[in-house]
View 1 (cartoon, rainbow, N blue to C red):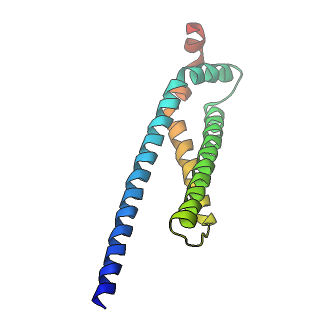
View 2: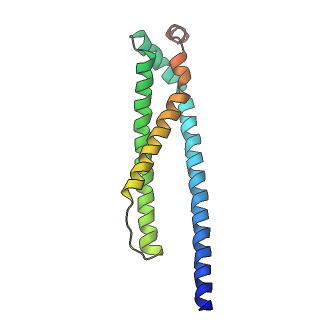
View 3: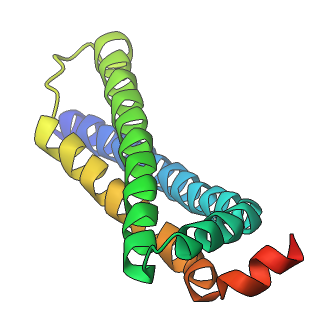
Length: 145
């Protein structure tokens, strides 16, 4: 009986360590992804300022430009979330099948929730990072070009 408890404790320790490693790696991936997103938005800010100036000159309101930015970043979020969820599902299947030899049951609801959260996060960060684009006056921007 004591040997069985020792084996169970050893397995529990290994599973806890694997869970901690996956959590740490996942957190690092999310943080680095956010940094890449912010960097990508910052790199394209000048192009967006010019585009917004053209749109404002043609009669677009700040709300319409914000909606276009939200839609654009939302599509990027859907793409990023779908790729991430798909990759996670494939990796989970491979570990379940080949490393642990257990049946794989996909968690579609959890994957869909991940895609939704990623979409909202990318859209909000994109629009907030582009706030200066919405505030700039079109005449000053077009004169500088």
